[in-house]
Amino acid sequence: MAVYRRGSKGTEVERIQARLKQLGHYKGSADGKFGPGTEKAVKAFQRARQLEVDGKVGPATWRALIEEPKKTEPTVVPAGVVAIARPEGSRQAPVTSGPSEGAGLTAPNPYARLNDQRLSQVHPVLAIRGRCMLELCAYENIAVLITQGLRTWEEQDALYAQGRTTGTKGKIVTKAKGGSSFHNFGLAFDIVVLDSMGKADWDASHPSWKRAAEIGKSVGLEWGGDWKSFKDIPHFQYIGDLTTAGCRELYQEGLQALWAQIS
Image (cartoon, rainbow, N blue to C red):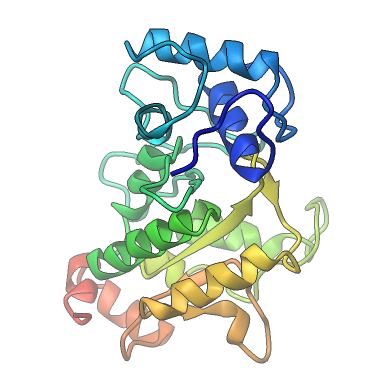
């Protein structure tokens, strides 16, 4: 790989700066220009990781820089994203989780534990395919945050009311009431693509959205952006031959009985 040093420029330098900033070593802007501030931050990172302190990002520093965050590193949640703990004995449990970033190698994902928490609550087959999607997106430098997975029926009703009833804010975001969404049965998740600074980019015309959809479909997920009547671009699901009506019927015997119908 290339060695990045003072004077280097480009998207890889921007990525280095963003990661150093996340780790607290860099205070400047991620402008893609490797200047004295970036060099100082690299040296601080190298000292912290007991690497050769030369201010250059070669293979060893790069691997250390993009590895998964250590358990001692705080998890940062983007503004507007809330993690919700699963109530003991609850039927469904919503959680919100976080992004990934790539460099053509195993990509760092400062929100990996949150994403994994989200996927741990959906059907195992969906979780496996979802993790494959995240890894492939990260490999192509596409940062992805899973914003919703398993969702309670009550939350579904609240979403349905958005934009429809007095006192609710925002535009209509779903056609499904509680029990009429595959989210309610752990068979779907939603995403948002993030920019290099970890902020949600809801501009679905951004090429990363299109590529994320292609990757999701390549691992066997159904994409809501392909729907005709109500396109749901953030939505991915794996439902086998089930319908929501069939899910409601099976759910009377418990979520595991429903999940047993999908292989």
